[in-house]
Length: 191
Image (tube, rainbow, N blue to C red; front, side, top):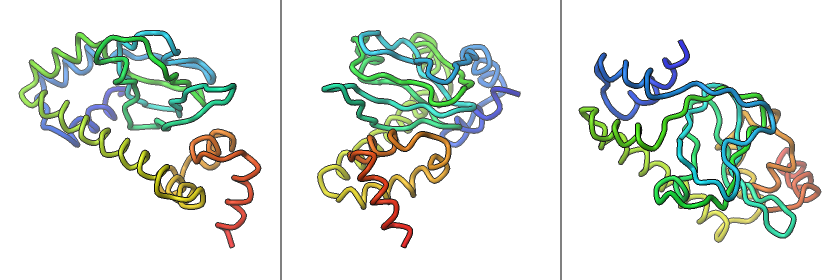
């Protein structure tokens, strides 16, 4: 079933009762996005969080006519823009499907209910937030302390399945180099 992968991901963090499983199936709504569709556009207020069942998304910001990718969300991962979602402010980032995708979304109000009504709901929210915080700090640190070659190696370790699934210019954007430079970095890393 569609929600089984989501329930397994939630169980990675907390125990879930049969009644809570029913609420997950009720509160997380299936959505289909075609390649190129937006989960969130800049200027919109994010009012939902998604769980990727199938597909790949990238979170990016456009500046000076260039896209700067910040992270990729793929199967069995949550996607969203907490910077917009939590304070209900317009997003500065976009989240776009890079492949045809199937996701399960939960609204802000239902996520708050999950935190309150699940036996370990608050714990779930805290653990997911902690994981996101560590991921963001790692990425930020890598831009200040690592060379482009090291950032590419980190990308290859973190997202080994994406090399063949997404266009190389998204990878170059994530690593912080031009596509031509990425080609040279990849060639040197294969040697």
